[in-house]
Length: 177
Image 1 (spheres, rainbow, N blue to C red):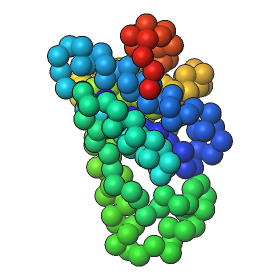
Image 2 (image 1 turned 60 degrees about the vertical axis):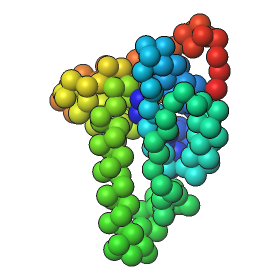
Image 3 (image 1 turned 45 degrees about the vertical axis):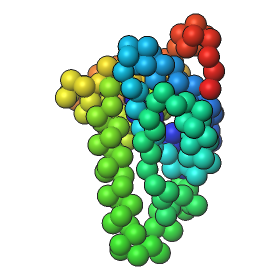
Image 4 (image 1 turned 180 degrees about the vertical axis):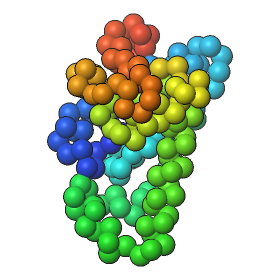
């Protein structure tokens, strides 16, 4: 399961979905995988140090799954347009490492069988399309599901098939994060 918790340059729109909501959706999916007698691996990429902290605490309470997560980024302290401006002050090596890290994150997300993200995230949409084309992606959960009709479904060459998160408490066996 790949989870993309985006906070930085999406501004207030990305903050309408709490980190707990993302983690609840990931818990539902990992519990379903565990029920099939498989070890769930949850990959989380985020641009928020607070979301990363919450994710690590959440994972510590879930010994039946494995968390894979990126290392803290040099750019986590700046967001949005300020990031583009601040990026100029970073050394070539830092910019190179940040770009490499983003590409590694994209590969992990694109290789996930389940993606949980905002459907308005271009990175998540690209990973979704790569996963569909490769025949790997089984499910894409849009945490901003009201935005599904507003996007161009063929932007990356395949209908991305975003779905709403399942709000039924029985879906997770009544469990919460």
